[in-house]
Length: 208
Image 1 (cartoon, rainbow, N blue to C red):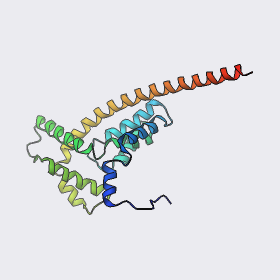
Image 2: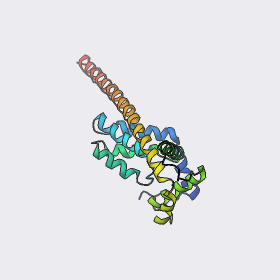
Image 3: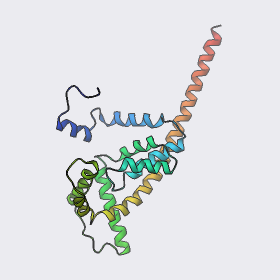
């Protein structure tokens, strides 16, 4: 029922993932409208969005929706908002996130003296590792568990350490920003509706 009459080509499908068909401005506007119209308190929605954003910094690619939902439930946040928050992790941001996680994790391990036995991966090696993980958890390729274990042997620990630190910072920042935006938007909406109600009441009174 909901299928396209003309199926998208493989190139079009890849392009739609990297660059939305109607542009990023339309996508961001849509996500913003979805967030501000969610039911619940500003705090619960902000917790949900922050959980989704924070999880995007973890190396558990393919499990972000599930982990974000569990984190939101644990913190009494909005689960749907957590799913929206995971859109922070996308093809345009994943490379920067992976490199940041890995480099920060290596630095923290080197400070404590635990990075001596770890082979430092270059950019291409890191991308290949995370691509293998993504294929495994999304069942989009024939990557086996053995492939994943071999890939993560030298990269998972530093990425987990660095990703945890960045996830905490991302959670705090995204919570504060989302909460502030929601409070301002809702106050403006109440003021606008009140003004519209008063105008309607004035017109009704003057019409008698």
